[in-house]
Length: 377
Image 1: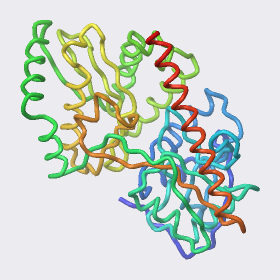
Image 2 (image 1 turned 30 degrees about the vertical axis):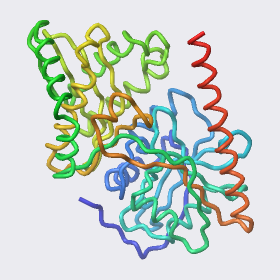
Image 3 (image 1 turned 180 degrees about the horizontal axis):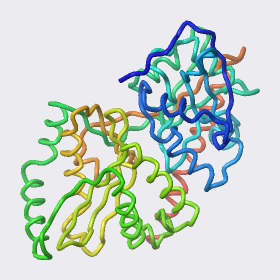
Image 4 (image 1 turned 60 degrees about the horizontal axis):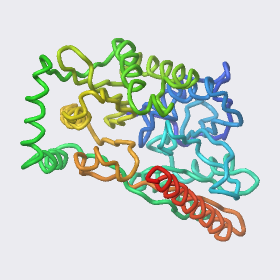
């Protein structure tokens, strides 16, 4: 249910320290729970543990609110970064752990709220960026609504997603048919040689213990060996545990598991906000890789999502081209970096940011190619 607010009241833009003890967290939570397009990473349950444990500095929670009631109408964590390699910009604070740049926007927020937010957030350079912004959303549309706003979209890409209802059922049927269905069922029968095979979804307080099991499973595989598992770094492990505990209290997290003979062999951590499901992390036991445990569980998660009574959309949060999930989740979510400016030379500044982003992508591509050549030599 969407919160009712007095939209005609005077507005103000405020910049909060996200970790301040004086921050009106209840107003923040209310906006996060009623946002036009949800983003679990910009609410207090995730952002505060992340910033605290990683000791990130210079992040402001820029917020437009009702001066009389204190109701929040638009809010986003904003920091200063390079657009690509050289050009500094104010930007919505995304990360590898939170690849979603959708600001929290009240359903009745309009161009006046966006304009006020931009003035407070854009800084001296007069440019504001939203990386990893889903483009086919009302939030993206409204961010570009003010008449004086100049905008451009760079770094477009598509990642795996799936739809609700009949469209989602058809996507599942298309993914799980023919040779793939026959093979997945054969592998599941072979897996039963290790004991009873079971799928389960965990919600509520029990999520905390099951997340510890997820951490152990992830650390036992290639991410652990590469020191990129959540448990590989004490700061990351602590932040993730605190975030999961906070989400478990509000019932906005689900862990899907696959077990064989009572042994956990695959696990997916999902955030669930306002009918949207975000698959945050996945891990599987490499000893059972010949049974495709990750793919088996991804299909189960797909079915569980479709069964949710208020299900609206699912975002895999996976990198574009992910070899395991893209063949199974046939929907696509297009994201990009939206750059806004109202400066007198707005178009020139935006083009400069775009060129900087393009340069960064070229350098990353060259680095990946060099690593691939090194591994094959």
